[in-house]
Each structure stands twice: as C-alpha cells, then as structure tokens.
Length: 568
Image (cartoon, rainbow, N blue to C red; front, side, top):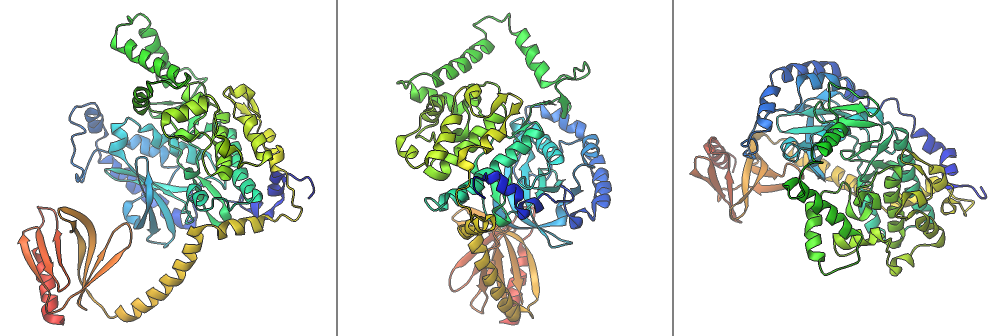
C-alpha cells in the first residue's frame, strides 16, 4: 500500500463498491407497491382543482392576504404537469404516512421523521410551504429538485422515494439518515479527528461533486449542514433547490428545462428574457428608477473589493437586501462578484470544509457579512487558523484559494474541471500502510453522538415500551383528539390529547413524541369556560384547553367528569 492514494483505496474497498449496487433511485419494493393505484387517484384528485383559478389570483393584490389557519388554498401544479412528472417520481397521499417527530427545518418548510403505514418503514419527509414559495416567486425550486432526483443516482446523494401534495404543502419522501449532519459532527469533534478520518470525509465530498459534474450540475450550496450522515459514516448530499444545470435553462413561463442550444420562438427562456430586458433599457435615461437601481447594485459590488472604510454600516445594510445563492462563509469570489460559476465554485466550498476540519472555523469567518466578503475577495485568512492546518492540506488550500478561477488547481474551463488533479494531491497520499477503511468508519461513528445516543435510546425505548405495555395493556381509550393547551399565559400549543379509563390523560406534542401524563382522581374536575374552552383542575395545577371557535368542546368536559365519576 506504499504511496497509494486515498481515492485508490476507496476504489479497491469492497464495502465502498457495494454502495453503488442499488437497483433503483426511486425507492424499494415497499414504497412502490401502491404506485399505480395512487397515481390514478392523484390524477383524479387534481382534475377537481382549478389551476386557472390560481393563475388568476397569482398576480392579484389580495392573493397573499391569507389566514395561516386556512385549510385550503389553490394548488400550483396543474393536472397536465402532474401527469408529466408522475411517471418519474411516484405520488402518494398524506394519509399513507404517520409523522413521528420533527427533525429540523429547511429554507421553506419543515423536515419530519415519518412512517409508512403499510410497511412501517421510516423515511424523512421534506415538507415545503407553497405559499412561502409563491410569495418569493421561487416555485422553480420544486421543479429543479425534482429534476435532479430524476437524473441522479449516487450513494452520496440522498435518495428520493416519491412525493405527495396537499392544498398548502409539497412534500418529498426521502431517505432517512438518523445520525445527524456533518456540521454538528464537526462541532462536537474539534481537535479529535485524525488525518485519515478527514481524508475520508473530504474524499466523499469530492466524489459526489465529480459525479454531479457528469450531470452538468452545480449544487451552489455546498456546506457541512447539507451533508447528512448515514450508516458507516456515508455522507448524503441534500437540498438541491438552488442547483444549476450548466447545459439547461429553466423556463419560468412553462416550468420546463430547455437545452441552451435550442432556440424556440414559441417559448421565451430566462436567458432570452434577460437579453430582451437589456435591449429595452439601453435607451432609458440614467435618472430612471430602473437605472438608479442598476447603479446601486453596481456600486455595491465595487464596495466589496475596496479597502475597509467608514461606510461599512451602510454597505452592510445593502448586503442584507441583496440575495446571494449559497451560504456566506462558503461563497466563491465569482459568486460574490456575479461572474460565471462552474464546478470550481462548488470545489471552493469543499476546500472551505477541508479547512474547517482542521481549524474548526471556516477560513474567511469574521464578525459581519461585509468583512467575510472582504476576506474572500482578498483571500485573507487569519494566521491563528493557518497554524492549525498541516502542510500537505495547506498546500492544497493555497493552490485553490485564488480569486481568478483560471489560477486554481484543476481548472480547465467553465464546463470542465480536472478532479483528478485534486485527487492526486499529496494531501490524499496514504502514509499508514495498515490503514483500514472499516476502522476509519467505525472510529467516526464512535465519535458521533447521534449514533451513540441512538444505541442508548434503543435500549431505553425497548425497556420502557415493555414495562408500559405490561402496565397499560388493559386500558381503554375513552376519547382522543387534537386540542390547544395553554403553555404560557395567552400562548396555546397544539397537542394530541388522549383520555383513558385508568383514568388518565396523555398529552403528546405531535412533532416531538413527548408524553405528559395527568393522573385523574376524585379531587379533579373539568369545567366549561366557553363553548370552545375548558379548564381541568388537579391538586397539582390547573390546565386550560381550547379548540377552534366553530367547534364545541363540551363533550370533552362531559367525558372527563364521567371518567372521574366512574373509574376513580
């Protein structure tokens, strides 16, 4: 194994090769069982939705004056569009899955751990808020992510098994990765990672970027938070909504991807729209609102490459108003300066992660976004960070951190990057002839608190479930439903409420599976306050519950008092 490169070791490792043997990108047998039945039903469901009604409202002033509790809003995907995508990504119903817990949030919604009712298999559900996307005119992100899931199959990309849609949300059913994300892992393991472990982490990132380049895709938001950890510390790239196809243009008029080489008179691409706008405004005076806006944007980018000045506060405010695609600390100079991006832009972010693994800080981190942009534009890295990076890694970092992409190691052209030059760098050379990938993976998993906690949680859950079932196996549910419970003064939180004949009341948070028990006795009683509100007295405290005004909550009061009378 002398002088072997780490990537060569990955190629030879049988475990790594086995990861590529996947029969289908869009799921396993259990998730496909009901495809045909659901596809037919979903098409019938969308037949009933008025897409033209949505298009009329889309530009109306009152469209976004909505109530967050509104149970119905127009669906933005037409029946025709559904039929086109249904054969690429299986469709399901919301009722096919049970939400178990909330895993976190994404830019436009929430992520949940869900269970398939038929198979009991666990998945991650990425639930996207349609109304928020409509507000910010970013519906295209749904189609981009769907397109990427359709064309990409790789062990380092999270799998998508299908989707479902209701009146207010669009949900992707994705692979569940139980062991957290790379960002959390790196924060927990500062000064604990060995060079082979870091080589393994960065090698996986480079491999997935190389694969995306074969599909002409630039991710545009490579960062530790967007890599989930699966079994054997296999990293999974997520969040493709901001991705970019170098060979395609997304047509916002038709919600379709168009080859850049195709010129069609019947449809206007984004590129053509921009050319048309530019021609239209060539004759506009410098005093026009449009030109004033353009001048402000130009001035903003000029400030980015100027030395520090007294106007930092003003420029900082301008930066907040300007929308960059990506995360500030990992942006490449060409992104900041609005120049053409390529695979080298994603590689810049990967090299930032390499630096982070050693220095425990992103290379250009600073107090404000303005200072971070200044650091990136001038390749300014603090010496205290540089001292923590070993020579081999530092050589790779310095050879890539160049403002001009042409000077970076591996650069060939906008649409061509030599990943082999990065992979052949001496940082990835193996010095330990007894190196074992299995041992590296095991060491990384042993350093992952999510993994260790999951092992402990399984033992605790098994014990608690056994004892609880043994104790409560003869219980009968008298009433159950969702009510809002008062938490702090006027703040109410929606909870699942279950009344048993023990008698006992269980309060369960829908997204956290946290159970609180209220043991009822003769000293307890429920009292109606309003038609939709009641209070429950117990020796320890008083609980307040309510529901929507149009509902009558008195059956709950009757059931609780009857349970106390009969079973206490």
